[in-house]
Length: 365
Image (cartoon, rainbow, N blue to C red; front, top):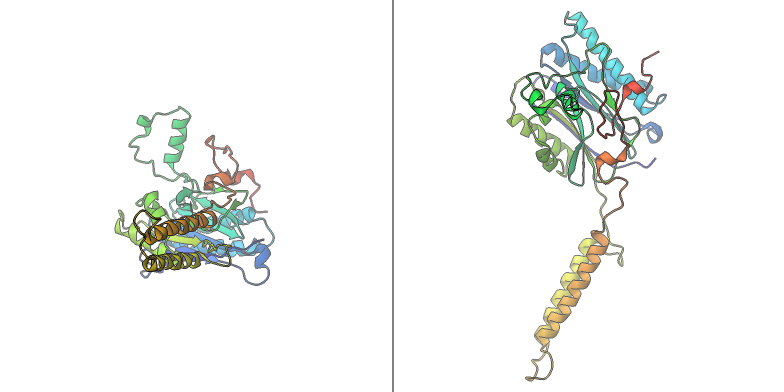
């Protein structure tokens, strides 16, 4: 399996106050087995209500996910391993809630992204999200488990009008999260999403995507350094923080675009520009040395130099367009197109790449 170079970054608002950096983590295997079972797992958890017990549950859920996924990564398929990790994390959250006599009152959102070679799998519960930035377009890969989404589905089905759902106070309430027994909905892809050079993946909590629009996030993500992009997004969201209990955390995985080189006598793009600059200087020197013509007899030296300069420029532009701006072949024209359209068990007939985990036997033996 072809491996892709990647850069990693993560940030949590106020992470130096209270160990909140434990809400975001990367995990990858070592050794030769990484070629077959390798890649990287990115995990982000978010407390639903901001209570101290929920923040502790979010930290415990993240640790459990890392342990459980590593335990079964070699023996199960990636979707099954992610599902196994979700169940383990949910068990930990539910146990903590029962021990604190808060059963049903502790909630955690979770999003995971597994990258191996050029294949991406994800799994999410709640309203933590995974985005893909490709060719300047930011696409949400995961599906929120909120009342608002179910209301929009009813509008599309004609059961409700926009006026009926406008201003509903509970529209942002979650319909699925860790802490429910069992978890009613888990969003995931069962077939791999194919990544491309230049893609950027963003995992973020509700505290980020609720205050920053997709245009702003898309403008920030292309920052050359993944860590810098993660920190900048957290800083932007933190400056617009609406509720002090909101958690703000991000994880960024970047896949650098390969440096394009012209296959033209070994010259790179910078080499061709230098060649063009030298040609222009030579034409100016020739124009300065050529004698002026007798009136009515032929072109002047300046005219000849200008004509030569135009020819050199046209050739340079043609080579540049052919070698550097030629549109690369793509397996997908946009992030949404890499997986077939499906219909979920919730009756959502909107074309989407997401499949519900309930389509697989996921209960532990």
